[in-house]
Amino acid sequence: MPAVVESPTASTSTARRKLRLPRFGLFCCSLVLAVLAEYCAYLNEGGGGNVRRVLHVIALTVLFMVMTLIFERFIDWLGRDSKQTENDHDRLSIMSRLLRRITPDFTGDRRQALKAAAVMAVCWLPYYVLALPGEIWYDTVQQVLQWKGLPNAITSGAWSDHHPVLDTLIFGVFYQLGAWIGHPAVGVALYTTCIAIAAIAVFVYTVRYLARSGVSRRAYLGAFLFFCVFPFIPIFSMAMAKDAVFLPVFMLFSVQCMEVARTKGYCLKNHQTLALFIMLAFLVSLTKKTGVYSVALACILLAFVVAGNRARVKLLGTAATSGLVIFILLPLVLFPACHIIPGGKQEMIAIPLQQSALLLREHGDELSKTDKDILTGMLEPNAAENYEWWAVDKVKGTHWTQQRERLLGPFLQAWAKNAIKYPQTYAKAYFMLEQGWIALPNSIVNENLQSNYLYTRTASGKNTGEAGLPQSRHTKLYDGIDQFVIWLGNQFFMQPWLSRAFWVTWLPFMQLYETVRRLRAKELSWTYAAWLVPMLVSLPFMWISGGSVSPEGLRYLMPMLGVAPIGCALLTVQQQPSHADR
Image (tube, rainbow, N blue to C red; front, side, top):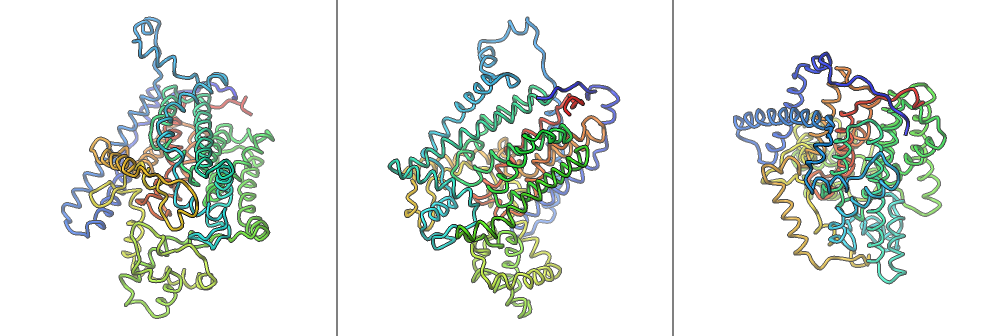
Protein backbone atom coordinates (compact mmCIF):
# COMPACT_ATOMS: atom_id res chain seq x y z
CA MET A 1 0.00 0.00 0.00
CA PRO A 2 1.44 3.43 -0.92
CA ALA A 3 2.60 5.69 1.84
CA VAL A 4 0.43 8.55 3.06
CA VAL A 5 1.30 11.78 4.78
CA GLU A 6 -0.71 13.66 7.35
CA SER A 7 -2.75 16.66 6.29
CA PRO A 8 -4.64 19.34 8.28
CA THR A 9 -7.65 17.83 10.07
CA ALA A 10 -11.03 19.09 11.08
CA SER A 11 -9.86 19.95 14.59
CA THR A 12 -8.85 23.56 13.91
CA SER A 13 -11.24 26.26 14.99
CA THR A 14 -11.15 27.94 11.58
CA ALA A 15 -12.28 24.76 9.86
CA ARG A 16 -15.01 24.28 12.45
CA ARG A 17 -16.34 27.75 11.73
CA LYS A 18 -16.35 26.99 8.02
CA LEU A 19 -18.29 23.80 8.64
CA ARG A 20 -21.11 25.70 10.33
CA LEU A 21 -22.86 26.34 7.05
CA PRO A 22 -26.54 27.28 6.80
CA ARG A 23 -28.93 24.35 7.07
CA PHE A 24 -31.32 25.60 4.40
CA GLY A 25 -30.13 22.90 2.01
CA LEU A 26 -30.75 20.20 4.61
CA PHE A 27 -34.23 21.57 5.24
CA CYS A 28 -35.10 21.58 1.52
CA CYS A 29 -33.83 18.04 0.95
CA SER A 30 -35.59 16.76 4.06
CA LEU A 31 -38.81 18.43 2.93
CA VAL A 32 -38.59 16.72 -0.47
CA LEU A 33 -38.01 13.31 1.15
CA ALA A 34 -40.92 13.93 3.53
CA VAL A 35 -43.30 14.93 0.74
CA LEU A 36 -42.40 11.87 -1.31
CA ALA A 37 -42.82 9.54 1.66
CA GLU A 38 -46.20 11.03 2.53
CA TYR A 39 -47.28 10.98 -1.13
CA CYS A 40 -46.76 7.21 -1.14
CA ALA A 41 -48.86 6.92 2.02
CA TYR A 42 -51.52 9.06 0.29
CA LEU A 43 -51.56 6.68 -2.68
CA ASN A 44 -51.80 3.61 -0.46
CA GLU A 45 -54.62 5.01 1.65
CA GLY A 46 -56.62 6.43 -1.25
CA GLY A 47 -56.22 10.13 -0.45
CA GLY A 48 -58.01 12.29 2.10
CA GLY A 49 -56.97 13.98 5.32
CA ASN A 50 -55.19 17.06 3.96
CA VAL A 51 -54.53 18.58 7.38
CA ARG A 52 -53.20 15.29 8.67
CA ARG A 53 -50.97 15.04 5.57
CA VAL A 54 -49.44 18.44 6.25
CA LEU A 55 -48.70 17.49 9.86
CA HIS A 56 -47.12 14.24 8.69
CA VAL A 57 -44.91 16.12 6.23
CA ILE A 58 -43.76 18.48 8.97
CA ALA A 59 -43.02 15.59 11.32
CA LEU A 60 -41.14 13.66 8.64
CA THR A 61 -39.13 16.73 7.68
CA VAL A 62 -38.04 17.15 11.28
CA LEU A 63 -37.27 13.42 11.49
CA PHE A 64 -34.98 13.49 8.45
CA MET A 65 -33.19 16.59 9.70
CA VAL A 66 -32.69 15.08 13.17
CA MET A 67 -31.43 11.82 11.69
CA THR A 68 -28.89 13.74 9.58
CA LEU A 69 -27.67 15.69 12.60
CA ILE A 70 -27.35 12.45 14.58
CA PHE A 71 -25.40 11.01 11.64
CA GLU A 72 -22.99 13.95 11.86
CA ARG A 73 -22.39 13.25 15.54
CA PHE A 74 -21.90 9.58 14.73
CA ILE A 75 -19.28 10.44 12.10
CA ASP A 76 -17.50 12.73 14.56
CA TRP A 77 -17.40 9.85 17.03
CA LEU A 78 -16.08 7.48 14.36
CA GLY A 79 -13.32 9.93 13.53
CA ARG A 80 -12.05 10.13 17.11
CA ASP A 81 -9.65 7.26 17.67
CA SER A 82 -9.39 6.68 21.40
CA LYS A 83 -5.87 6.39 22.79
CA GLN A 84 -5.51 4.11 25.77
CA THR A 85 -2.70 4.44 28.27
CA GLU A 86 -1.07 1.53 30.07
CA ASN A 87 -3.18 2.25 33.15
CA ASP A 88 -6.32 2.13 31.01
CA HIS A 89 -5.15 -1.18 29.59
CA ASP A 90 -4.65 -2.59 33.09
CA ARG A 91 -8.21 -1.69 34.02
CA LEU A 92 -9.72 -3.47 31.02
CA SER A 93 -12.15 -6.22 31.90
CA ILE A 94 -11.54 -9.83 30.98
CA MET A 95 -14.16 -9.55 28.20
CA SER A 96 -12.51 -6.40 26.81
CA ARG A 97 -9.12 -8.10 26.77
CA LEU A 98 -10.64 -11.09 25.00
CA LEU A 99 -12.17 -8.81 22.36
CA ARG A 100 -8.83 -7.10 21.85
CA ARG A 101 -7.20 -10.48 21.27
CA ILE A 102 -9.92 -11.55 18.84
CA THR A 103 -9.93 -8.29 16.85
CA PRO A 104 -7.67 -8.67 13.81
CA ASP A 105 -5.00 -6.13 12.89
CA PHE A 106 -6.18 -5.00 9.46
CA THR A 107 -2.87 -3.30 8.75
CA GLY A 108 -1.00 -6.54 9.45
CA ASP A 109 0.19 -9.44 7.33
CA ARG A 110 -1.70 -12.29 5.65
CA ARG A 111 -2.03 -14.13 8.94
CA GLN A 112 -4.11 -11.25 10.26
CA ALA A 113 -6.22 -11.35 7.10
CA LEU A 114 -6.91 -15.04 7.67
CA LYS A 115 -7.78 -14.26 11.28
CA ALA A 116 -10.29 -11.65 10.12
CA ALA A 117 -11.79 -14.12 7.64
CA ALA A 118 -12.10 -16.74 10.38
CA VAL A 119 -13.89 -14.31 12.70
CA MET A 120 -16.34 -13.36 9.95
CA ALA A 121 -16.90 -17.02 9.04
CA VAL A 122 -17.82 -17.82 12.65
CA CYS A 123 -20.32 -14.94 12.65
CA TRP A 124 -21.82 -16.18 9.38
CA LEU A 125 -21.95 -19.84 10.44
CA PRO A 126 -25.52 -19.81 11.87
CA TYR A 127 -26.91 -18.39 8.62
CA TYR A 128 -24.87 -20.88 6.61
CA VAL A 129 -26.22 -23.84 8.61
CA LEU A 130 -29.77 -22.51 8.45
CA ALA A 131 -29.60 -22.06 4.68
CA LEU A 132 -28.07 -25.44 3.78
CA PRO A 133 -28.05 -26.70 1.14
CA GLY A 134 -28.75 -23.16 -0.03
CA GLU A 135 -31.21 -20.35 -0.71
CA ILE A 136 -32.64 -20.70 -4.21
CA TRP A 137 -34.43 -17.88 -6.03
CA TYR A 138 -37.12 -18.22 -8.68
CA ASP A 139 -34.87 -16.81 -11.42
CA THR A 140 -32.22 -19.38 -10.53
CA VAL A 141 -34.72 -22.17 -11.12
CA GLN A 142 -35.31 -20.85 -14.64
CA GLN A 143 -31.58 -20.64 -15.28
CA VAL A 144 -31.06 -24.25 -14.15
CA LEU A 145 -33.89 -25.36 -16.42
CA GLN A 146 -32.11 -23.63 -19.30
CA TRP A 147 -28.90 -25.44 -18.38
CA LYS A 148 -30.82 -28.73 -18.62
CA GLY A 149 -32.49 -27.69 -21.88
CA LEU A 150 -35.97 -27.89 -20.35
CA PRO A 151 -38.93 -25.53 -20.89
CA ASN A 152 -38.96 -22.59 -18.49
CA ALA A 153 -40.68 -19.25 -17.98
CA ILE A 154 -38.47 -17.62 -20.61
CA THR A 155 -37.69 -20.16 -23.33
CA SER A 156 -38.70 -23.62 -24.51
CA GLY A 157 -35.32 -24.93 -23.41
CA ALA A 158 -32.72 -22.74 -25.08
CA TRP A 159 -30.36 -20.45 -23.16
CA SER A 160 -31.41 -16.82 -22.93
CA ASP A 161 -29.62 -13.61 -22.07
CA HIS A 162 -32.72 -12.52 -20.16
CA HIS A 163 -30.57 -13.40 -17.14
CA PRO A 164 -26.78 -12.97 -17.47
CA VAL A 165 -25.33 -15.95 -19.31
CA LEU A 166 -22.27 -16.04 -17.05
CA ASP A 167 -24.52 -16.50 -14.01
CA THR A 168 -26.41 -19.29 -15.77
CA LEU A 169 -23.09 -20.96 -16.52
CA ILE A 170 -21.95 -20.72 -12.89
CA PHE A 171 -25.21 -22.13 -11.51
CA GLY A 172 -25.24 -24.84 -14.16
CA VAL A 173 -21.70 -25.97 -13.36
CA PHE A 174 -22.49 -26.37 -9.66
CA TYR A 175 -25.76 -28.10 -10.50
CA GLN A 176 -23.89 -30.52 -12.75
CA LEU A 177 -21.23 -31.19 -10.12
CA GLY A 178 -23.95 -32.10 -7.67
CA ALA A 179 -25.66 -34.34 -10.20
CA TRP A 180 -22.38 -36.17 -10.87
CA ILE A 181 -21.73 -36.63 -7.15
CA GLY A 182 -25.21 -37.91 -6.47
CA HIS A 183 -27.80 -35.14 -6.14
CA PRO A 184 -28.18 -31.50 -7.27
CA ALA A 185 -28.56 -30.53 -3.60
CA VAL A 186 -24.87 -31.34 -3.16
CA GLY A 187 -24.05 -28.91 -5.95
CA VAL A 188 -26.16 -26.23 -4.28
CA ALA A 189 -24.29 -26.82 -1.01
CA LEU A 190 -20.96 -26.53 -2.86
CA TYR A 191 -22.10 -23.27 -4.41
CA THR A 192 -23.23 -21.90 -1.03
CA THR A 193 -19.84 -22.76 0.46
CA CYS A 194 -17.83 -21.26 -2.41
CA ILE A 195 -19.83 -18.03 -2.67
CA ALA A 196 -19.67 -17.58 1.13
CA ILE A 197 -15.88 -17.98 1.08
CA ALA A 198 -15.59 -15.55 -1.84
CA ALA A 199 -17.82 -12.96 -0.15
CA ILE A 200 -15.93 -13.18 3.14
CA ALA A 201 -12.59 -12.78 1.36
CA VAL A 202 -13.83 -9.72 -0.52
CA PHE A 203 -15.31 -8.06 2.57
CA VAL A 204 -12.07 -8.62 4.52
CA TYR A 205 -10.07 -7.23 1.60
CA THR A 206 -12.32 -4.14 1.54
CA VAL A 207 -11.81 -3.51 5.28
CA ARG A 208 -8.04 -3.96 4.92
CA TYR A 209 -8.04 -1.40 2.13
CA LEU A 210 -9.92 1.08 4.31
CA ALA A 211 -7.52 0.46 7.19
CA ARG A 212 -4.50 1.20 5.01
CA SER A 213 -5.98 4.27 3.34
CA GLY A 214 -6.15 6.69 6.24
CA VAL A 215 -9.65 6.16 7.67
CA SER A 216 -10.08 6.05 11.43
CA ARG A 217 -9.69 2.81 13.35
CA ARG A 218 -13.27 3.00 14.58
CA ALA A 219 -14.49 3.41 11.00
CA TYR A 220 -12.82 0.34 9.54
CA LEU A 221 -13.54 -1.78 12.61
CA GLY A 222 -17.15 -0.62 12.39
CA ALA A 223 -17.24 -1.68 8.74
CA PHE A 224 -15.87 -5.10 9.70
CA LEU A 225 -18.46 -5.45 12.49
CA PHE A 226 -21.23 -4.48 10.07
CA PHE A 227 -20.17 -7.11 7.55
CA CYS A 228 -19.97 -9.69 10.34
CA VAL A 229 -23.19 -9.19 12.27
CA PHE A 230 -25.75 -7.39 10.07
CA PRO A 231 -27.89 -10.45 9.25
CA PHE A 232 -28.85 -9.50 5.71
CA ILE A 233 -25.23 -9.40 4.57
CA PRO A 234 -24.62 -13.15 5.02
CA ILE A 235 -28.21 -14.14 4.17
CA PHE A 236 -28.11 -12.62 0.69
CA SER A 237 -24.39 -13.07 0.09
CA MET A 238 -24.89 -16.85 0.24
CA ALA A 239 -28.03 -16.97 -1.89
CA MET A 240 -28.09 -18.91 -5.14
CA ALA A 241 -29.06 -15.80 -7.05
CA LYS A 242 -27.36 -13.69 -9.69
CA ASP A 243 -27.06 -10.73 -7.32
CA ALA A 244 -24.97 -12.81 -4.91
CA VAL A 245 -22.50 -13.50 -7.74
CA PHE A 246 -22.47 -9.82 -8.68
CA LEU A 247 -21.84 -8.46 -5.17
CA PRO A 248 -18.24 -9.67 -4.59
CA VAL A 249 -17.22 -8.59 -8.08
CA PHE A 250 -18.83 -5.18 -7.61
CA MET A 251 -17.13 -4.72 -4.24
CA LEU A 252 -13.71 -5.48 -5.78
CA PHE A 253 -14.45 -3.06 -8.62
CA SER A 254 -15.49 -0.46 -6.03
CA VAL A 255 -12.17 -0.82 -4.19
CA GLN A 256 -10.32 -0.34 -7.47
CA CYS A 257 -12.38 2.79 -8.16
CA MET A 258 -11.46 4.07 -4.70
CA GLU A 259 -7.78 3.45 -5.39
CA VAL A 260 -7.99 5.23 -8.76
CA ALA A 261 -9.55 8.23 -7.02
CA ARG A 262 -7.15 8.17 -4.06
CA THR A 263 -4.11 8.17 -6.32
CA LYS A 264 -5.69 10.50 -8.88
CA GLY A 265 -5.27 7.82 -11.52
CA TYR A 266 -1.53 7.26 -11.06
CA CYS A 267 -2.14 3.64 -10.07
CA LEU A 268 -3.31 3.01 -13.64
CA LYS A 269 0.29 3.47 -14.82
CA ASN A 270 0.91 0.02 -13.40
CA HIS A 271 -0.02 -2.46 -16.15
CA GLN A 272 -1.16 -5.11 -13.68
CA THR A 273 -3.44 -2.64 -11.88
CA LEU A 274 -4.90 -1.47 -15.19
CA ALA A 275 -5.48 -5.06 -16.32
CA LEU A 276 -7.20 -5.85 -13.01
CA PHE A 277 -9.42 -2.77 -13.34
CA ILE A 278 -10.45 -3.75 -16.88
CA MET A 279 -11.07 -7.38 -15.91
CA LEU A 280 -13.29 -6.36 -12.99
CA ALA A 281 -15.18 -3.94 -15.25
CA PHE A 282 -15.89 -6.86 -17.61
CA LEU A 283 -17.05 -9.10 -14.76
CA VAL A 284 -19.34 -6.38 -13.38
CA SER A 285 -20.84 -6.05 -16.87
CA LEU A 286 -21.24 -9.81 -17.32
CA THR A 287 -22.80 -10.66 -13.95
CA LYS A 288 -25.63 -8.10 -13.98
CA LYS A 289 -27.67 -6.66 -16.82
CA THR A 290 -27.18 -3.08 -15.64
CA GLY A 291 -23.52 -3.67 -14.76
CA VAL A 292 -22.18 -2.18 -17.98
CA TYR A 293 -24.00 1.09 -17.25
CA SER A 294 -22.55 1.14 -13.73
CA VAL A 295 -19.07 0.69 -15.20
CA ALA A 296 -19.58 3.48 -17.73
CA LEU A 297 -20.94 5.87 -15.10
CA ALA A 298 -18.11 5.05 -12.68
CA CYS A 299 -15.42 5.66 -15.32
CA ILE A 300 -17.01 8.96 -16.34
CA LEU A 301 -17.20 10.20 -12.74
CA LEU A 302 -13.62 9.12 -12.01
CA ALA A 303 -12.42 10.97 -15.12
CA PHE A 304 -13.22 14.23 -13.33
CA VAL A 305 -10.91 13.51 -10.37
CA VAL A 306 -7.90 11.85 -11.99
CA ALA A 307 -4.84 13.86 -13.06
CA GLY A 308 -3.74 13.79 -16.69
CA ASN A 309 -5.40 12.90 -19.96
CA ARG A 310 -3.76 9.47 -20.13
CA ALA A 311 -5.63 8.33 -17.04
CA ARG A 312 -8.87 9.70 -18.48
CA VAL A 313 -8.29 7.86 -21.75
CA LYS A 314 -7.72 4.60 -19.86
CA LEU A 315 -10.91 5.06 -17.87
CA LEU A 316 -13.07 6.00 -20.83
CA GLY A 317 -11.43 3.26 -22.88
CA THR A 318 -12.42 0.73 -20.22
CA ALA A 319 -16.02 1.93 -20.37
CA ALA A 320 -16.05 1.83 -24.17
CA THR A 321 -14.51 -1.64 -24.27
CA SER A 322 -17.05 -2.98 -21.79
CA GLY A 323 -19.86 -1.54 -23.90
CA LEU A 324 -18.32 -3.06 -27.04
CA VAL A 325 -18.29 -6.50 -25.43
CA ILE A 326 -21.85 -6.31 -24.05
CA PHE A 327 -23.58 -4.61 -26.98
CA ILE A 328 -21.58 -5.86 -29.98
CA LEU A 329 -19.43 -8.91 -29.31
CA LEU A 330 -21.94 -10.93 -27.27
CA PRO A 331 -25.19 -10.38 -29.22
CA LEU A 332 -23.63 -10.37 -32.71
CA VAL A 333 -20.91 -13.01 -32.34
CA LEU A 334 -21.11 -15.21 -29.24
CA PHE A 335 -24.88 -15.60 -28.88
CA PRO A 336 -25.55 -16.68 -32.50
CA ALA A 337 -22.58 -19.08 -32.39
CA CYS A 338 -23.85 -20.69 -29.15
CA HIS A 339 -27.58 -20.50 -30.06
CA ILE A 340 -28.33 -18.19 -27.14
CA ILE A 341 -31.48 -16.09 -27.37
CA PRO A 342 -30.77 -12.38 -26.70
CA GLY A 343 -32.64 -10.78 -23.81
CA GLY A 344 -35.58 -8.54 -24.60
CA LYS A 345 -35.73 -4.77 -24.44
CA GLN A 346 -38.73 -4.85 -22.12
CA GLU A 347 -36.41 -4.72 -19.10
CA MET A 348 -35.13 -1.28 -20.11
CA ILE A 349 -38.63 0.19 -20.57
CA ALA A 350 -40.28 -1.49 -17.59
CA ILE A 351 -41.36 1.82 -16.02
CA PRO A 352 -43.05 3.17 -19.20
CA LEU A 353 -44.78 -0.21 -19.61
CA GLN A 354 -46.04 -0.08 -16.02
CA GLN A 355 -47.30 3.48 -16.46
CA SER A 356 -49.01 2.58 -19.73
CA ALA A 357 -50.82 -0.35 -18.11
CA LEU A 358 -52.25 1.92 -15.41
CA LEU A 359 -53.10 4.47 -18.10
CA LEU A 360 -55.16 1.86 -19.95
CA ARG A 361 -56.82 0.81 -16.72
CA GLU A 362 -57.84 4.28 -15.56
CA HIS A 363 -58.21 6.21 -18.84
CA GLY A 364 -58.58 3.57 -21.53
CA ASP A 365 -61.89 5.01 -22.73
CA GLU A 366 -60.34 8.46 -23.13
CA LEU A 367 -57.45 7.40 -25.37
CA SER A 368 -57.51 7.58 -29.13
CA LYS A 369 -57.92 4.30 -30.98
CA THR A 370 -54.40 4.63 -32.39
CA ASP A 371 -52.79 5.09 -28.98
CA LYS A 372 -54.88 2.33 -27.47
CA ASP A 373 -53.90 -0.12 -30.23
CA ILE A 374 -50.22 0.75 -29.80
CA LEU A 375 -50.31 0.29 -26.03
CA THR A 376 -52.27 -2.96 -26.10
CA GLY A 377 -49.98 -4.30 -28.81
CA MET A 378 -46.89 -3.45 -26.76
CA LEU A 379 -48.06 -4.70 -23.38
CA GLU A 380 -48.78 -8.23 -22.29
CA PRO A 381 -52.34 -9.45 -23.02
CA ASN A 382 -54.92 -8.04 -20.58
CA ALA A 383 -52.22 -5.88 -18.97
CA ALA A 384 -54.76 -3.37 -17.66
CA GLU A 385 -56.73 -6.10 -15.86
CA ASN A 386 -53.56 -7.85 -14.62
CA TYR A 387 -51.84 -4.64 -13.49
CA GLU A 388 -50.11 -5.00 -10.11
CA TRP A 389 -48.87 -1.83 -8.47
CA TRP A 390 -45.98 -3.61 -6.71
CA ALA A 391 -44.40 -5.41 -9.70
CA VAL A 392 -44.04 -5.07 -13.48
CA ASP A 393 -43.81 -8.76 -14.39
CA LYS A 394 -47.42 -9.18 -15.55
CA VAL A 395 -47.13 -6.05 -17.68
CA LYS A 396 -43.74 -6.43 -19.35
CA GLY A 397 -43.56 -10.21 -19.70
CA THR A 398 -40.42 -12.15 -20.57
CA HIS A 399 -40.45 -12.21 -24.39
CA TRP A 400 -39.49 -9.59 -26.95
CA THR A 401 -41.43 -10.26 -30.15
CA GLN A 402 -41.19 -8.82 -33.66
CA GLN A 403 -44.45 -6.98 -32.97
CA ARG A 404 -42.91 -5.30 -29.94
CA GLU A 405 -39.82 -4.34 -31.93
CA ARG A 406 -42.02 -2.80 -34.63
CA LEU A 407 -44.14 -0.89 -32.10
CA LEU A 408 -41.25 0.35 -29.92
CA GLY A 409 -40.90 3.76 -31.60
CA PRO A 410 -44.65 4.51 -31.77
CA PHE A 411 -45.04 3.26 -28.20
CA LEU A 412 -42.44 5.65 -26.83
CA GLN A 413 -44.10 8.52 -28.69
CA ALA A 414 -47.55 7.61 -27.34
CA TRP A 415 -46.15 7.16 -23.84
CA ALA A 416 -44.45 10.59 -23.90
CA LYS A 417 -47.51 12.31 -25.34
CA ASN A 418 -49.85 10.92 -22.69
CA ALA A 419 -47.39 11.80 -19.91
CA ILE A 420 -48.37 15.42 -20.54
CA LYS A 421 -52.08 14.64 -20.41
CA TYR A 422 -52.07 12.29 -17.42
CA PRO A 423 -49.10 13.18 -15.21
CA GLN A 424 -50.89 12.07 -12.04
CA THR A 425 -51.47 8.58 -13.42
CA TYR A 426 -47.82 8.26 -14.43
CA ALA A 427 -46.66 9.54 -11.03
CA LYS A 428 -48.98 7.12 -9.25
CA ALA A 429 -47.70 4.12 -11.20
CA TYR A 430 -44.07 5.10 -10.64
CA PHE A 431 -44.17 5.95 -6.95
CA MET A 432 -46.36 2.98 -6.05
CA LEU A 433 -43.76 0.77 -7.71
CA GLU A 434 -40.72 2.45 -6.13
CA GLN A 435 -42.18 3.39 -2.76
CA GLY A 436 -39.98 0.89 -0.94
CA TRP A 437 -37.05 3.26 -1.49
CA ILE A 438 -38.74 6.35 -0.02
CA ALA A 439 -41.72 5.48 2.18
CA LEU A 440 -41.85 4.52 5.82
CA PRO A 441 -43.23 1.03 6.50
CA ASN A 442 -46.93 1.10 7.28
CA SER A 443 -49.85 -1.25 7.90
CA ILE A 444 -50.64 -1.53 4.20
CA VAL A 445 -47.20 -1.97 2.70
CA ASN A 446 -44.16 -3.57 4.37
CA GLU A 447 -41.01 -1.89 3.07
CA ASN A 448 -38.77 -3.52 5.68
CA LEU A 449 -35.84 -5.77 5.06
CA GLN A 450 -36.87 -9.40 5.45
CA SER A 451 -34.98 -12.63 6.01
CA ASN A 452 -36.91 -14.09 3.05
CA TYR A 453 -35.88 -17.64 3.92
CA LEU A 454 -39.29 -19.07 3.12
CA TYR A 455 -39.41 -17.60 -0.36
CA THR A 456 -35.89 -18.57 -1.33
CA ARG A 457 -35.95 -22.06 0.17
CA THR A 458 -39.24 -23.11 -1.43
CA ALA A 459 -38.22 -21.70 -4.84
CA SER A 460 -41.86 -21.73 -5.81
CA GLY A 461 -42.82 -21.47 -9.44
CA LYS A 462 -43.71 -23.30 -12.61
CA ASN A 463 -41.61 -26.38 -13.40
CA THR A 464 -39.74 -26.15 -10.08
CA GLY A 465 -39.83 -29.90 -9.60
CA GLU A 466 -38.29 -30.52 -13.03
CA ALA A 467 -35.22 -28.50 -12.06
CA GLY A 468 -34.32 -31.08 -9.45
CA LEU A 469 -33.27 -28.38 -7.00
CA PRO A 470 -33.88 -28.98 -3.27
CA GLN A 471 -36.97 -27.61 -1.60
CA SER A 472 -37.37 -27.20 2.13
CA ARG A 473 -39.83 -29.28 4.10
CA HIS A 474 -39.49 -27.03 7.15
CA THR A 475 -41.69 -24.21 5.87
CA LYS A 476 -43.10 -23.52 9.34
CA LEU A 477 -39.59 -22.83 10.68
CA TYR A 478 -38.72 -20.44 7.87
CA ASP A 479 -42.11 -18.77 7.99
CA GLY A 480 -41.56 -18.20 11.70
CA ILE A 481 -38.17 -16.60 11.01
CA ASP A 482 -39.66 -14.33 8.36
CA GLN A 483 -42.54 -13.27 10.61
CA PHE A 484 -40.16 -12.55 13.50
CA VAL A 485 -37.95 -10.33 11.31
CA ILE A 486 -41.01 -8.50 10.00
CA TRP A 487 -42.26 -7.97 13.56
CA LEU A 488 -38.83 -6.74 14.64
CA GLY A 489 -38.69 -4.29 11.75
CA ASN A 490 -42.05 -2.82 12.75
CA GLN A 491 -40.86 -1.92 16.25
CA PHE A 492 -40.34 1.79 16.81
CA PHE A 493 -36.62 1.73 17.56
CA MET A 494 -35.79 -0.84 14.87
CA GLN A 495 -37.94 0.49 12.05
CA PRO A 496 -35.49 3.00 10.57
CA TRP A 497 -32.55 0.58 10.52
CA LEU A 498 -34.53 -2.26 8.94
CA SER A 499 -36.30 -0.06 6.43
CA ARG A 500 -35.33 -0.43 2.78
CA ALA A 501 -35.65 3.34 2.40
CA PHE A 502 -32.94 3.91 5.00
CA TRP A 503 -30.30 1.97 3.05
CA VAL A 504 -31.35 3.08 -0.42
CA THR A 505 -32.20 6.76 0.12
CA TRP A 506 -31.73 8.19 3.61
CA LEU A 507 -28.22 6.96 4.37
CA PRO A 508 -26.86 7.83 0.88
CA PHE A 509 -28.45 11.26 1.22
CA MET A 510 -26.82 11.81 4.61
CA GLN A 511 -23.44 10.66 3.31
CA LEU A 512 -23.68 12.88 0.25
CA TYR A 513 -24.88 15.85 2.27
CA GLU A 514 -22.05 15.57 4.78
CA THR A 515 -19.50 15.07 2.00
CA VAL A 516 -20.64 18.25 0.25
CA ARG A 517 -20.45 20.22 3.50
CA ARG A 518 -16.90 19.03 4.16
CA LEU A 519 -15.86 19.75 0.60
CA ARG A 520 -17.17 23.31 0.93
CA ALA A 521 -15.36 23.67 4.24
CA LYS A 522 -12.20 22.25 2.58
CA GLU A 523 -12.03 19.50 5.17
CA LEU A 524 -12.17 16.76 2.55
CA SER A 525 -10.41 16.40 -0.79
CA TRP A 526 -12.11 15.37 -4.00
CA THR A 527 -9.84 12.32 -4.17
CA TYR A 528 -11.57 10.91 -1.11
CA ALA A 529 -15.01 12.33 -1.86
CA ALA A 530 -14.87 10.21 -5.02
CA TRP A 531 -15.15 7.16 -2.78
CA LEU A 532 -18.89 7.79 -3.11
CA VAL A 533 -18.70 6.66 -6.75
CA PRO A 534 -19.75 3.04 -5.97
CA MET A 535 -22.84 4.34 -4.23
CA LEU A 536 -23.58 6.90 -6.93
CA VAL A 537 -23.42 4.31 -9.71
CA SER A 538 -25.72 1.93 -7.82
CA LEU A 539 -28.39 4.40 -6.76
CA PRO A 540 -29.89 5.31 -10.20
CA PHE A 541 -30.65 1.70 -11.01
CA MET A 542 -32.55 1.28 -7.76
CA TRP A 543 -34.99 3.91 -8.99
CA ILE A 544 -35.77 2.05 -12.21
CA SER A 545 -36.14 -1.36 -10.57
CA GLY A 546 -39.21 -3.45 -11.18
CA GLY A 547 -40.40 -3.81 -7.60
CA SER A 548 -39.13 -2.09 -4.47
CA VAL A 549 -41.56 -3.74 -2.03
CA SER A 550 -41.48 -7.20 -3.59
CA PRO A 551 -39.01 -9.93 -2.57
CA GLU A 552 -36.97 -8.98 -5.64
CA GLY A 553 -36.31 -5.61 -4.04
CA LEU A 554 -34.31 -7.32 -1.31
CA ARG A 555 -31.63 -8.54 -3.70
CA TYR A 556 -31.66 -5.29 -5.68
CA LEU A 557 -30.33 -3.37 -2.66
CA MET A 558 -27.42 -5.72 -1.93
CA PRO A 559 -24.83 -3.35 -3.51
CA MET A 560 -26.16 -0.51 -1.36
CA LEU A 561 -25.60 -2.59 1.78
CA GLY A 562 -22.09 -3.50 0.62
CA VAL A 563 -20.91 0.07 0.02
CA ALA A 564 -22.75 1.67 2.97
CA PRO A 565 -19.70 1.55 5.33
CA ILE A 566 -17.47 3.12 2.66
CA GLY A 567 -19.45 6.36 2.63
CA CYS A 568 -19.12 6.59 6.42
CA ALA A 569 -15.43 5.73 6.39
CA LEU A 570 -14.44 8.41 3.88
CA LEU A 571 -15.74 11.09 6.24
CA THR A 572 -13.17 10.04 8.87
CA VAL A 573 -10.13 10.31 6.58
CA GLN A 574 -7.29 12.11 8.35
CA GLN A 575 -4.66 11.65 5.66
CA GLN A 576 -4.18 12.51 2.01
CA PRO A 577 -2.18 10.77 -0.70
CA SER A 578 1.35 12.05 -1.19
CA HIS A 579 3.35 12.33 -4.37
CA ALA A 580 4.87 9.00 -3.42
CA ASP A 581 1.63 7.40 -4.62
CA ARG A 582 2.59 8.25 -8.13
